[in-house]
Amino acid sequence: MIAAEAVTHAIVPGRVVLRDVSFRIDEGEHVVLLGANGSGKSTLLRILAGLVFPTSGRAVFDGAPLERRTLRRDGFERRLRRQVGLSFQSPDAMLFNPTVFDEIAFGPRQLEEHPADLEPRVAHWAGRAGVDHLLERSPFSLSTGEKQRVCLAALLVLEPRLLLLDEPAASLDPRSTGWLVDLLQELEVTTLVSTHNLSMAPELGDRVLVLSEDHRLIHDGAIEPFLSDRERLLAANLVHTHRHRHGDREHRHYHTHDWS
Ligand SMILES: Nc1ncnc2c1ncn2[C@@H]1O[C@H](COP(=O)(O)OP(=O)(O)OP(=O)(O)O)[C@@H](O)[C@H]1O
Ligand SMILES: [Mg+2]
Image 1: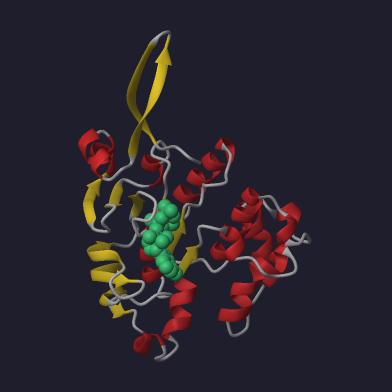
Image 2 (image 1 turned 60 degrees about the vertical axis):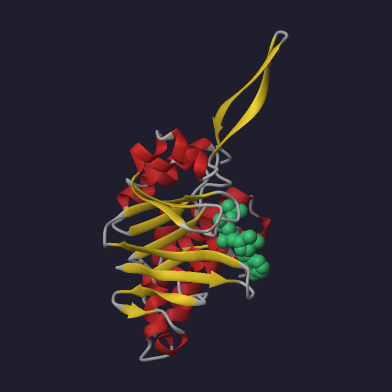
């Protein structure tokens, strides 16, 4: 369904943030994307959504390369935007409409010729996202967790085939995080989800892609064995040590990052 083929990306010449990254995700897969801060996760998701074009290599959706030229052809970009939903790491970057209703209705209004049944559709997806009581509110007045839910509803209303979610649980409390995991499992949608939350990762997918701090794909495979492989976790800087004091003795031991 979506693939990265030898994707290398330099933000400015010489400043490489992805190096020769290749993988393929098939329809129906649930894949987790891990990597330390700055390893290139958000950049990779933007490339897969056709928002950023890599310096070399390419992203391919349903066999069609996501290049400036091809996006302009025969309504391909419109199809892509309907079928591939990307949620940004910061919900504030996505919200700009006067009300939550307009925010969720924005995609259908922009991307569909004659959006039918808009009100019931918005109400339905607002309900699934748990924000149906907020429809008349300004998105800017919401808490960060509420904003993340609105962003998700705004993607789901288009019933995309592929969801690219950039740390969607970063501002969710444990109950909301459980709700998100359940929702993603219920939906028949292919997902690629970045997270720093290793305890949540196995619930978000059974396959993991791991970016190293030097911006290479260093693991692509089953998630459970990866998460119990301390050497690999250390190599990707996904675990850390810090000092503990027990009485007059001080020692270090490993901790996983768990920031959500
Ligand atoms: N527009 C930009 N201008 C300059 N540097 C950028 C830009 N966008 C990203 N970068 C750099 O590219 C690298 C990868 O950034 P990216 O946001 O993809 O990392 P990430 O893995 O998502 O990190 P995090 O876990 O902190 O979200 C970082 O060093 C970042 O500073
Ligand atoms: Mg990021």
